[in-house]
Image 1 (cartoon, rainbow, N blue to C red):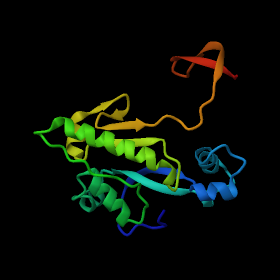
Image 2: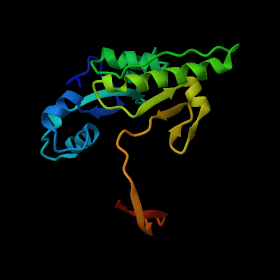
Image 3: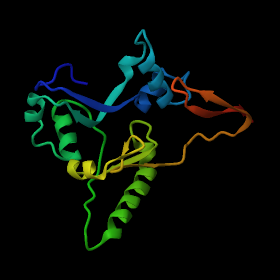
Image 4: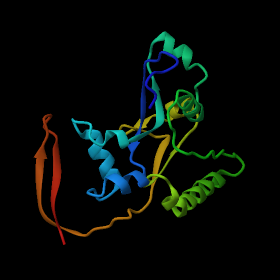
Length: 193
């Protein structure tokens, strides 16, 4: 993560903090996997382990001020945003471009499925643990036009793989939790088998 930005911006930079597999093997044997180790290191008050975190930026949410709007005038697509984040000094995740063809509407779905399957076979070679892909519509205008459903843009879809660690458990109880707003949430109590 860059210490300073070359351009003053008011924005949110969203991404994921990970621990590389080689770092996990060397320093974090007490954790069951690198994702748990990264979550634990990020939450620690004493910052122990935080120096082993690596941040990958994947979303830029601009502020509403004039300086930021001017700096981001040409950032109108996901790819432009990723390139901009990289120019600022952030690591970005690897990505592939899939272009839609109006004459072959099923071709895009097949390309996405092929990329997903290929990445699944290459998963072990990645420097950090991954659990799938996120597919996004490139154009910010189209993303905005599609809207938001359940606090997630309709233009973004997660394509997850089956977990590598699978465990069995038995539900030993159910209860209802009441939130501050009065919302009722069912909660299951599990016991490992």
